[in-house]
Length: 297
Image (tube, rainbow, N blue to C red):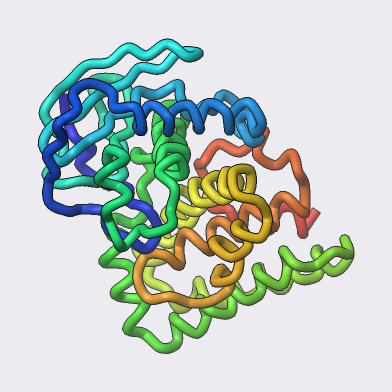
């Protein structure tokens, strides 16, 4: 087995690393099983969400208590399980490369619900989010094109301490938020053109490593957050979805969350420009580049 050496993917806005918790119940606990059943039910309704070949339960799911993991291979209601030592120190929502396969690692349910930093977030969302990263790497080898070499934390720190870069990033978020709330096709196209103008102005302010790293995290994490948001809408309805994902989406936030939000909004804008955009997208170029192609044609 080997860990991913480049990126450990975490849920937006919250590092999930905490100390280990012991559990008395052995094997696949019933509440963890219920999370897999919830994901399977979501998939019956949502399908691949437009991403060809994507199914969250195509990947083994490891439920971790920080010390050991129960690894589940789920197949249409059939559960094959094995136990191993935890592959990460502490608890994370992440992916793990085991030979040629990518697996999903999440906290087991009882531990997840005890983490105050993620209060209100559903563990099923995490499984969808992280399995989407497994999909990205299985089919598109996204880590081989991992931006400019800056970690999310390094990049965010550089942007957060530069008033001009913060201001221009805020303009991007606000323009995208305006676009996804527009109804008229002409207005959507006009706002998208204005967005691309802001992108180009901001790109001139960035170093090459900053630019490459930003578009990478917006693409990789933003699209996973977009999938996660779709699951939230399915599970909890529009009111909760708008409160959890849209109310703050157009607002700048220090830290990594802004890349998740911006990438999600870019995906939502692309939905308005062409609902079928995902069928030909290969995670090999910036989402803003795809937007520019639509508005320039």
